[in-house]
Length: 174
Ligand SMILES: CC(C)(COP(=O)(O)OP(=O)(O)OC[C@H]1O[C@@H](n2cnc3c(N)ncnc32)[C@H](O)[C@@H]1OP(=O)(O)O)[C@@H](O)C(=O)NCCC(=O)NCCS
Image (cartoon, rainbow, N blue to C red; front, side, top):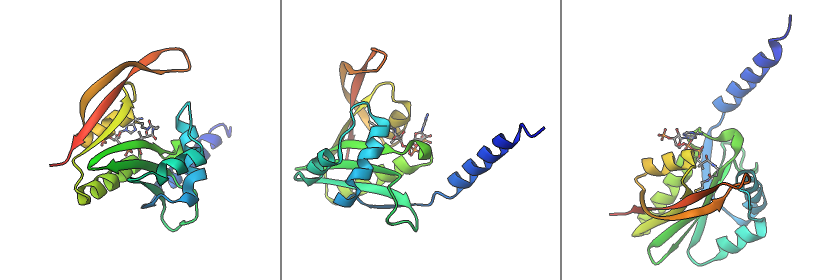
């Protein structure tokens, strides 16, 4: 008779959680690196450690952003992006959003912040690499006017042994 209760509880929890994501974007700092590494491990088969992320962030021209829940400045980030701009040629080193918060606009928010900064810094172009089968990421980048400029066949190997191509995408700043 109460078979529907778990469904009602889950639905209500999800709705209240999603309804309450009020994101704010901050600079990525050393204090965020371990939490960022956790997010990275959720998304990638070969995750980067906090130390590896720290080394990348310390390189010349590197910068990043985290997105957090509004009013929770010390809470673990919900997503982050790491980028690098050397002499006007920029690249996205990595971007990821927590599984439980995907498709809520947080990836777009992080990318918008990177684009704003590169625009201010008068960068010429922004490059990134993406798996040809990564539907969500491709939608995000296409919407932001990235164009395919290269392809590395069979670059990614999946746990099931399949291989897929890496696409090189470029966004030009005019
Ligand atoms: C790629 C990623 C960062 C996108 O972040 P996100 O917060 O989920 O994306 P957004 O909510 O901002 O949505 C961006 C676009 O993708 C679409 N999208 C998001 N998730 C989707 C999904 N699962 N299927 C299809 N489209 C999806 C959205 O509808 C939106 O498109 P629109 O502008 O046409 O409406 C996120 O999916 C992620 O962390 N993936 C794992 C790590 C990864 O693949 N990083 C990229 C490596 S290149």
